[in-house]
Length: 108
Image (cartoon, rainbow, N blue to C red; front, side, top):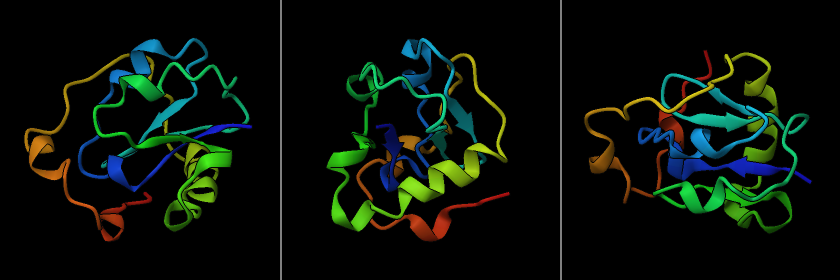
């Protein structure tokens, strides 16, 4: 099993979760983070550190977020590993309560 970063992370991109990850399984994109499912050790540490509740265990993903399992796996191959916390975007707090943000996902 792995943990999955979901839509709630888009445009918020808080990195509190990165600080507690013992295996550096987070990868950073322009507007969100993803978890590499091949590196995640299912320790659960990141879940409580996400200020927008964007991280779920694979077997508890909300149905409307199920496509993020594949999105995390795909983007973890493209995006660089992030090893330490960074400042969130200046407008992160403005985005944290917005629900429909998938169209802002940039997969570069």
